[in-house]
Image: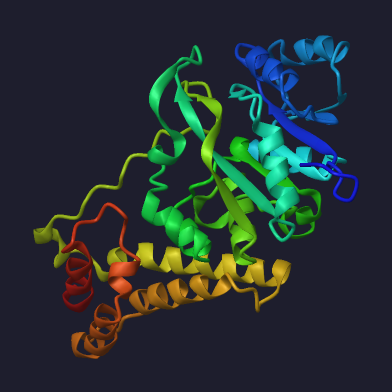
Length: 343
């Protein structure tokens, strides 16, 4: 609650658009019905060729808040477009906004109050109801879709946000808000981002490095799913599994390649975070431990006897289990270790 000693911060909405005319109206209207109206909306349009800009310009005439419009002459992609929108905001708390969702009226108030009550927190995110193209609920939430389960939320609350995030992004950009001061660490956003993350995963990882990211355990918006969206919840196709009979016939370089790539991605992330937030940041220990494990797997020697100790040590210390996929069954970590020993 805002008081004279703790006044309400200025609120900015960073709204990114790209050919969003078909669904933009509902998102815009939901900004108008916020219990705590934003002070400004910064629109960054990524070279739309439909009527998106005409709509924004028309709605700006009657908006109860300041509207700033930027348009990229050529498409730059979602990572850079959101980075530009955030950089242009002048408020204290910045809300990331997609072009096709619908915010619940309490969203800006609830998230801003959380920041006001938790001054050490830089980034806050919430859940979202899943909806169809007509914004009708289809059951389920975004967190369920990305496997942000109760055990993972518990890990997050006990300082393991980095570990959770390195298992895969759990944070949706349009359900996220951040302090303006956090931009000094998070911007500019690299493109591409190591590990295949998008801009929202990047923001979450940087905040996880300093253990300054928290979540609000409730949906604060409706998330539209449709084929035209640039960023969605549909999972990419899983790589084909390697049949057991093929494991011992394939070239060793083919086995090591994904570990080497993962090691390289983790090292690049560590270097970036060390520069931006300092090498001693508390959240980086989880990154270093994971890097060490995949470095071990990527550099196992051709001599199988020399592999025995590092692999057995990693099994008994729980590393294969800790870094296995969330949906892997009980035996999967041991199969992976056996493959490292014998392939």
